[in-house]
Length: 83
Length: 83
Length: 153
Length: 153
Image (cartoon, rainbow over all chains, first blue to last red; front, top):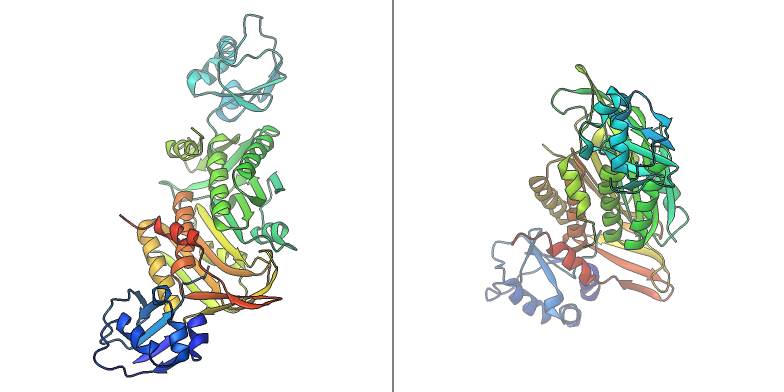
């Protein structure tokens, strides 16, 4: 499963994307945030306020209770500031 | 007192402007419309539906009960269709 | 201070030029809204042109009063209103309203406000030329309703 | 059928050219609204530039979904959305939304709707460069409220 990070989430984790293989117990976006948080200091810093983080599955916005099974690409980013 | 006519009011009366001297009994815009209506067929046609006609005194919109004394320029026209 | 430009002219206008005049050399403007009104040709039987007449003097004054009111209601850095008169063919420009502000809300609201008032209150009249002859355009009841929503109660 | 153009690019855009592309050769368009979002330099300590990052692929898709929704809500002949990315200095353009319709109401509402959603929902992020360093721009609570008003209840 490919994961992408943007803006300060990317900066804190220190990479723009990676391929991960979380355990089967990781079912939702929420679970994935929890699992990523345990993967190192940068991850813990990026996800220190998980409610602020936005997620997308296959390039569409999802809520944190969305199920990730079947996802090709999951992205994490701060609130958007375009326009 | 100068009077100006625009759009189909102008066309019906057959002139764009003129100088008039209504009698003292003509106090308001309403009175003036009544007096002009008696000045000929073109006027009667232009003012046949007086409620439709808009008026301006010295280049500002007024209601038909506005007093005309002191006015330098009075204008009559149909509802505006600019923009 | 709102920088104000009001022109009534037969010539066409150039949005890019007018926008540049409003914004160049400034870094306080975050939002520019432009509205262009264009002559349509496709209402029922096609019209071949519009002829626009105005009350010279009053038209400028009336637009000026509404620009002043817009500047009092919303924080605007600049407003440009250009209204064409004379013969205008389908596809050609009729009117331009440009508003500049720090944020988009003020620029959008002021442009809508000015257009609603231009439609109902500025002394311009349109006569259509069609293959059947000419006739004066009538007011849309909808335009009066649009203008009325800005009236303070 | 609404003619739709969506571009994300580093280069600046030319409103006059984009408007011409949207309107030329047609006589059914009566109203064109454009919104230009411009980089401001005057928020407290001056910023020297914005750096705009986006989620390539999702940004285009997300804007496309909102343009489709706008076209379903209002009778639009054309919509153009151009969002710049990369380094943008004060006074330079960031975003352009152009809407074309027969009448002004649809063009105004669609442009406002698209801007409100671009601000809160399109995956772009701004980082400011100032003399003190760089920092990520935070969401204005006001923008969320503006976007929420379009939600059907």
